[in-house]
Image (cartoon, rainbow, N blue to C red; front, side):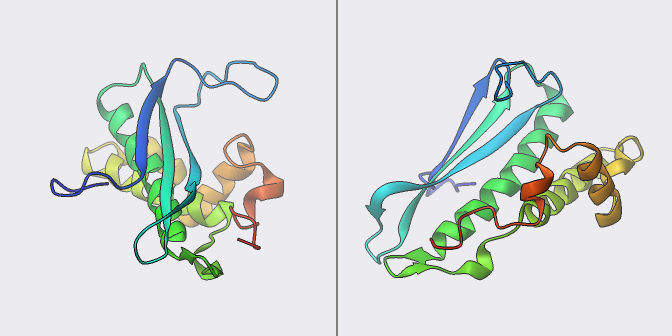
Length: 158
């Protein structure tokens, strides 16, 4: 997400061996996740929070799978950085506080664009439209649990 002149953008990418659920069981199909919000108590010179976003990718990913996962998780990071940029000492711009559904639709949308760009869009038609993404999310609550799907990803009192 940084440029050659400014790569300190508050986003860190790391690789993990496996992802586990809250019971410690390996989630074999999970390829990445994005978390974090801001560095506690740290502000920029103009009073904005400093982002502290972490992207974790499955270490065994290569080629198109790695690229597509990075595009997807990168979209989540962009959403989080935008929200943090709208926060200051007086609070946060809640219009930037997307729901789980909104951020997943954006992430799957850019992921599908990637798959189309490498000629593999047909193999990923399950994320080719908002309706298809909604069906996919309903069938895969581990991506975004249904109770969080239509709620803002951050507490509204930030």
